[in-house]
Length: 521
Image (cartoon, rainbow, N blue to C red; front, side):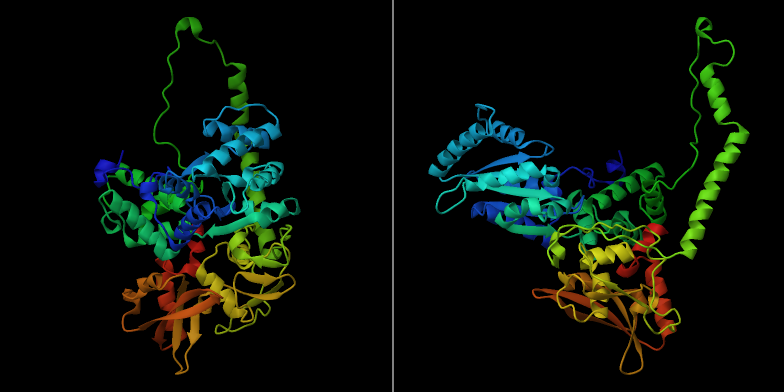
């Protein structure tokens, strides 16, 4: 509809898993390479996890286009099924007749086919999307396929692709034997701020455009802040923004349009339609004399008295919630799962389990701290906790900057992937003061953000708000094999000067630590 208006050769933000539009971040590239390597080297079981909308299915289609003729690939995406039904689907996808309905007969038939493939130097790859929906019994019986092997290699390679719940399921006692046989496990991380910008640019370039031509800088920042690194969300926001812009004949999408899209997506708009619903004509012989029972009921429901008490009840409900919010602290029972005593953040669920009141009810150990000190809350690690989950729990979002602040408050944590049960962890309250750092020369610096790559940190090099200031990129080791990069800006003469710059950047959506404020604004 809007492609011609904006000069696009096609829709740049459709949500279908088209490999042509795949943007490979380092995390996506590693997952794709791991699948190719695991299949080629006959590693048996491979597990790939990632959040909803992160691009897992697009990676699968890319993988299918990448595999050579020596690999027979079966793609399974209907996973709410029994093991026998799953086996029948695999045989049908291989154009094999389903001989017999027993489990043993199905396995025997598959084994015979695998031996034929092996003699020709070929291998079978079974790729299962939405694997978290597989019944536990079916997953346990899939383990038996690993027994189809020679003395040197596995005859069948199985790739599990699913949401973080897949790792939760694999960590259960029922599937511990299957978990031990998974040779490769990778987790696809959400896009960083810079990766999100590059993702938008990548898609627009493919249709003959660019971001500066169709988006204002503030619009881009708001899209990235709302999407929190999820490509599908970026696609949906951009697609809806172009629809609204097309309807308003606006060649460039601004922040106001993005706010309207976000409000629509959050269900916040309650505008009445600006059109009249046509009333169908009724012939005389079908006309109803007097109001029907249905009309009487509708009239009663929408009578002034009923509507008055209805809205009074709604007002009372929100008043009660407001009073409760301001007089009690938020408490939350930790989510419990069968995890080992050491938590691996890369392989566990990162969805928030906390309401929007969590941050406003943040507990501090000393309410009387002055503006130059940082407020903290101390917690104990329990089953199911890990660094990404804790940032989601207490800040409602998770990114490198928030994790870095958590690590800074807890210098004993040398690997952000590993924390232990009963370990004490300090949770700093997110305020503007958290970003201000003292320098040895009695000046101040602003910790703008922490990023996964030095390229992402370079986005602040030409920021107008930092004119005359020094922008430093400082390496920060966050695990044994991983380095992140802090962006520090100085030197500022006073905390007040820092606050003014922080306020400007915050309004423009350029501070990762305050990305959640875009959602709630």
